[in-house]
Image (tube, rainbow, N blue to C red; front, side, top):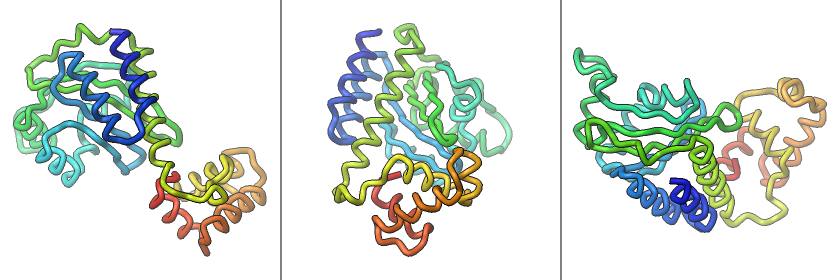
Length: 234
């Protein structure tokens, strides 16, 4: 199994677009005996994902905001360790949202699987799920939590690099300190709050925000936040 993890990490590193990463993860999932995969990042209420699930299920999942109640996502955030799961463990009676989620997941061929969660920065969580339509997935080929976490981190950082390759002039790239201060601003933190959280002087925090603002011709920090998100810089 180490060879499969190593191959996934190498293929992610060599990928120059999201399609190539998706192909690499799909090959890895199939090598492990799974039919589907889902890579998901959560940060607060925001969810970013790419997967090989049926298109109909992708639409239902996102429009119904199922990431908020998905038992797999909830468990991943709680334990931060590789774990197996099955829909048999979810409520199968009543009329709750969780029951509806379970029925729709099974209907779209997602019955069991294994999930590899990793804690990211600023309260984010990344997770790779391999899913099967079988009542109980065979996870015997998946061993070694450390290698699994390395693979998830390799996917995460490669996606960030690919996202940052949007054509932006070098003078407009944010410095690490500017990006950090902007990230806290996105989370609603004032300059004094960011100063306490980072140990940087409040006036210096404001300096970094002003510098970032000038680079993108933004008149306000909220406008800067919108620009940075739109260009995939944050």
